[in-house]
Length: 275
Image (cartoon, rainbow, N blue to C red; front, side):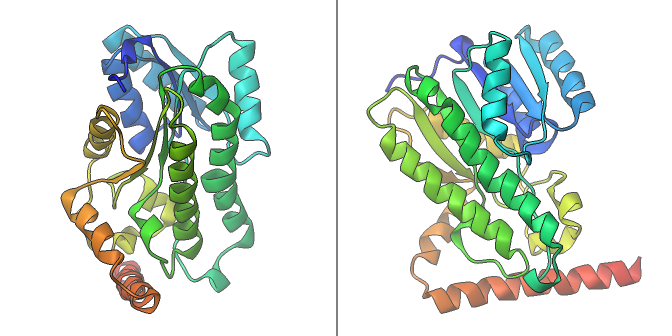
């Protein structure tokens, strides 16, 4: 495969109002890609669009949309078609997590998480993949290091990201006969609003947080390769962890994560008690 001609792309980015999604938008604009920014918070999207247009001169369209709604991907495809926008690449960053044992979680919140992290990602991917396969763009789905191990106290989130990883790697294989590059991107704990939504700063297990810039730069390095991989973990330590996890029994793997998330839960209680 030849390198992606980003100046010839129109990239749709979900979850673009903050964090990794906003950083993808900034780095894509720097590379010359036109953009379609999607998220719930219209004010943030509009401000980001103005920033990117002024800085890079690219066309930026804004589509405020709650991806938890049913058939969100099909609604999104219909809207860009109505506007006459030819999307050639998609980056799915929208997602959120919660922290706590399943029996104590709010059932509606869990259903909303699955709707955004899994259902919408599949629906957006399916709504656009035919047109992406006809070109030479990319489909990036943001998974997580949580995809590689069951995570007590973040059970649904980790399971959702395991789905994203498996689904995207399968799409990679299905797209080998086309010009489309497909990548599952797995960041570790990243310095974004994620932990504000989770409601527990200690849910990172005390590990150093990556920057959104580092996460997105890793994605571009993978996509720029002649034969991009189906997935990539962000950071050398995380890539080593992925290899090491394959040597563990399932019992050891889940108990390892229980120890990490258990410490996170205790730290979170201590911090709230001290506040």
